Length: 184
Image: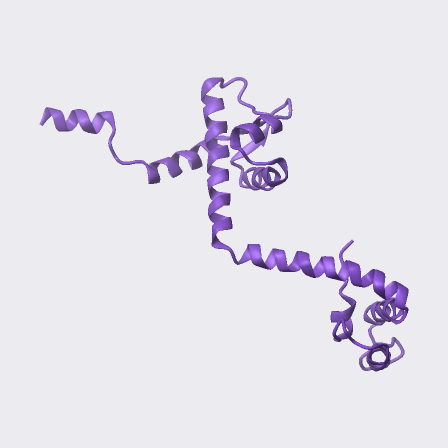
């Protein structure tokens, strides 16, 4: 169930007086009442009545204001995280690390390539609540998948992705190139 900001719905401040709440509610109730043929909106009217009933009673308003404060705090935290470019950079690092771990495991044992949730958490250094997002993303991209026993394993596409990342970061010095230069 999603939180409904009654103050936003009524287009009033959380510091609005009971008189203001009543006046604004009456204005919107008249405008959105289902009997109003021009601007009637049954759903909006129902939401307005719910907001009004909650905010006109001092006890229910006080309870609602606690939830509203939590909602605003969460929204502020969300906006702050969304505007921080370091978050995306950290996500990329964790996802690259997870792909590398799963590639290494697949190389070690192609027939048993999976790593469980707890071991991934331990090896990656990423807590479970954060790991969920990264595993969801990597799975949705098709880079990892679940094995028959429920562990995570890298896919062919995931290996290709991990290899393309390493190629971008690694200097171009391979044994073949070194041998070619030595021969000339």
